[in-house]
Length: 459
Image (cartoon, rainbow, N blue to C red):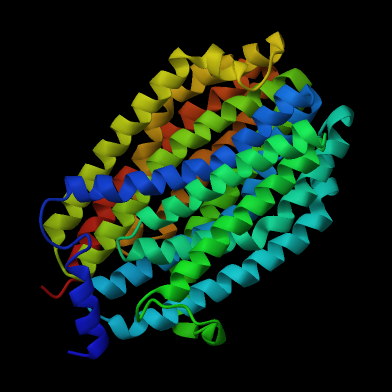
């Protein structure tokens, strides 16, 4: 056994063992910090919306909110790639190939930096044309463009945080990324209040506050990796692409990123339809979306838990433990998502009041919450099961099924049903309908591909 392997095994004694012992407590302890970190990251945008909605104007709130789908489509491809980092490093750990980890870490972090710089540049160029294409109203357009361009200055830091956190989570450490996000959250809230209330900077202030807080969280994760023990330690001089690891990251994370990107593209079509209904609808819907995203991050945390636990146990050849990891992750995700969404629906008017005092804005936001959130736990059927498929090495299948079941069907709905019944209610009911279609197809695929994956194991 190599010195690196002995070092890793010695340190793993005091850390979560994904390959042995009861799974429930370990999955929950892994997923909850991950969910909390992602939710805090989303709360950056929620605080942006709340601050400008309360202390600027409803047009400023609409400007911030109308950018959510634009931001998502531009970053989900690369954030999806970070899931590839998580899966391949977890697989190396589970199969005992510790000599591969160092190269995978440096390839991942170099990819984070390159992709972040690319997004920074492209965001400046396409901000106005894309928002015009989305039919952003005239009273919102200039503010929305300004917010988007300032927001994208922080893209390198968002990528560094997500890829760095994926490296840490692959080795069972989901707590420290959470601590980094909590610290950055305090920075974000403080700067939001300072820039908007004191300096009257409106959308520029909230975007700049988000950039600075993302730089803080990204810097903390980078610092943690530079202090890690081998083979996880990050050395700046070793940053670069190693073809073997880059291909694996793209193979696993690429389809997940493409899925998220196309999913966000369908939401851009939906946002364009919302934009046609006026600034009150835009602002109310934008505020309500924050709670949908928080619910999604709860589910996605258990999706990543399923991917990580299944990947390690599949690498170790433990079939039964792979099945149990999926079952526990799915049940926990349903319970967590339904509980959170039910509470949000129950207090929807009070929650919407945090974002705006305008009665029309509160009405449309509350309407969206009551029609969408109560069904949000259906997302578990394709997110968590899709995570298990990626843990088994099948990343393209859940991506394709999600694109067809959700994205394509949503566009068809917009071009047919919504055109005939041009109402907000007709528009947003497409979410639970497409979630159900996608969930059924991904679950069927899992039971077919699971057998093929297990047949490949040598023992």
